[in-house]
Length: 379
Ligand code: ADP
Ligand code: MG
Image 1 (spheres, rainbow, N blue to C red):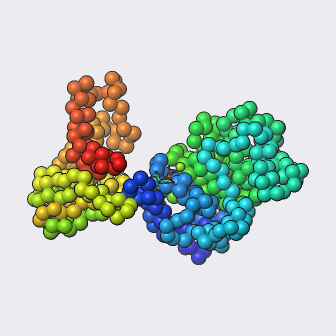
Image 2: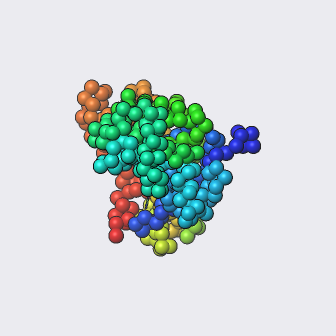
Image 3: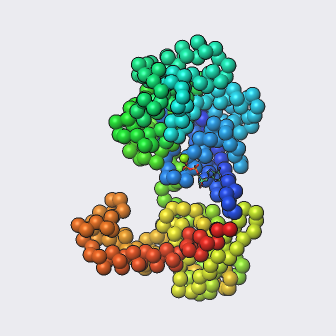
């Protein structure tokens, strides 16, 4: 990538957003980067909770960031306030909220015109502009329909038209195809593609990877695989020494060869609680790498400790993951998780019970998100 070779319309650098939720801090965006030129359709892809709505809210100037830089069409978004922020939201960006959000008592035309009417544009002018947009999205014949008389796909297209009413440089759409059937979803994607063809950049969030081939750029909100793959020698810690912090990126799983470690939940007010401990013969820190989640707690040595770091592959060799083993046996390594309740499947009931028992055991002995830590989060 040669950043100098084309202009940036949206440039995000080292963005951090923290929420002090309940008692501990979550950081859905931690060093996030994005460089979007004009004229692209870009998808933010990630599972629920990966920070998609947070990022779109930052780009809309609706929430503050903890640190970092966000520049849209030359405007330093994080420093905006008052009328500058209003101008930015009116002219630079358009927003299509999740779930359409049309006003039920207004017609399609009035819904599209609403942001202009709120901004004090004359009614006749605002409605004329709405008609132009409804024609662009192929819904001019539905202009007088109320939202409840439109299909989900039509409502979403009206919501897109409303997002475009200020002729923004950047259109943001939060999960625009969620809850639509594939025919309506295709129409919405087609519409978004045609809008970017005219030189506007469109950023959508989605957890549906079927949309990706239709995108110009895909931004993965959770890196595919952060777990370590390189074997490492033993590690020794002195009492009090930290193995990893809560929220750190997960890399290795640790086999405790000697000694005892504490598992410590860090709270946003700076306090902490020991929620569990693990001693020689147990593993610590396995769920983070397995799930691709950040560490959910700190681990530190209570005594002198010797640990053997393990990659996921090494861990699975020692401690065969029953679902993986089953998948391998079924010869479908790349497929989605097998349905354990499927009676046609080559496991009998006892196997299923054994499997579930082993999985429960794995979870019970895990550091991240075990029963004790769940209890520890409840006030
Ligand atoms: P997504 O849209 O990808 O599902 P979100 O941006 O909504 O993800 O949320 C990312 C994380 O931030 C989640 O863990 C969520 O619980 C948390 N979060 C989002 N909004 C708030 C808020 N207002 N206060 C506290 N935590 C929040
Ligand atoms: Mg969301």
